[in-house]
Image (cartoon, rainbow over all chains, first blue to last red; front, side, top):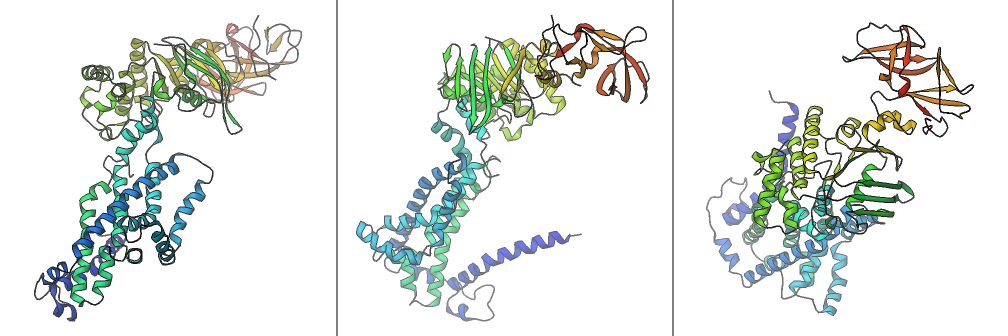
Length: 268
Length: 350
């Protein structure tokens, strides 16, 4: 007999899956199915005719590869910067009791309280002055600002989960402070660090607004598509959308094993 | 091999004193246990010796070298932690080799040392496993092996057996004593378990509220407690204390006439261990009213009162006792402790 708790659990899981998968499914259906499938009602489960014409057409749009490359560059840069700045801050929050630690924690979250729209215009002006307007670095910097709060808070909880005694044992057995971090804390934190990196990457990859405002010629893929596809037919839009989803999904797929505890300690 | 010299070490957390001036010498090759209730400062003292916490004042020397300001790695010591602190991402082999690797020991020597430490702790079969595949007892063995492998001058242990179940604890205790005795490593051992301290240590330092209350051999501490606290802390059940008046330089208890140290006026505290009392069939003694008899096997533990003051007595198991029974008791007068009831300190037995 199946208990009611189990029914509840299963229906919950199904709902969450449907919530994410149905839109992706519809996008995919439109992307590969062509115009007839898009406007058909009720929707067929499987498109009448499979074609990759939408994709090839999409990939032949001028500058799309360059934009994609830029997107990857921005996302990777954002990932690196978020970790370089976020992980030490997270470590400090986790290990040291200092005056204003809670305020600091709150302030980090508060950075997300300002809508990007309000920040983007003054930022564009500042970026022009600094000479980083319309550059990969500029956009990466903006995206780092968006990803950093998560990087700090996630790594902080990660480091809290690594027993202090392990670090102390490393000190006693011959490690300096940085040495203990590298030999003991880091290997244990890798799964969580990887998760944080993915998060930063995805935030950057998906971000449209700031990227659009801060660039003119050197647009990232999302920003480029926003301008390009607004005039394109719906099936091209859907094909583009599907291609945008793919890298994030693939990236998460390949590093997903790091998301789960490797040695049963780090992300307990 | 080295001695440890702790000189008037204090430690304050804000205005909260954790150590109020502790001095202690641990001789070369000696095993000293720091024993006390939780919050007495024993772990704080150990961590100061390890260099994990900086003392507020005072000096710590290891092997004649002032290490007060040195980081843990430069102090030439090894430590066994309460939660083992075995590195989860390293195999047992690499865990044991960790300290040696850090000091740049040659590879073949590391291998020899690891094999030797593993053999001592009987974990040769586990060398290629990860800690997550080990039981608590096995992890503890790895932690001890890791500490022994570096052949430290000084070994620090922070309640290493407290997370093991009772049977395993007894087994590890015996084994640890044998291993450490053959290694002759200077050892400072923190515990709140008096049986552990009594069984393992050459000397025990009893700590209370940030001070060392008494230091001596296990038997010395048991037989001649220097304060009411020590008498009441050591022994299971602890020492009995009776508050009695002194009149004409003698103390009367029932028909007994006892001689406290000379020159005492007013009341004294008389300390008697439960097993230092015997039933007095004839002759002088005092009346003890039994409240609860507990037959424990080797002896019967009686809880009751003497002239309204509660007392515990361990008597031979060959007699039947009922609640309400009154028996005459007589103490072994060579084993009495006299304390000042105001200061709580022992009176000199002249």
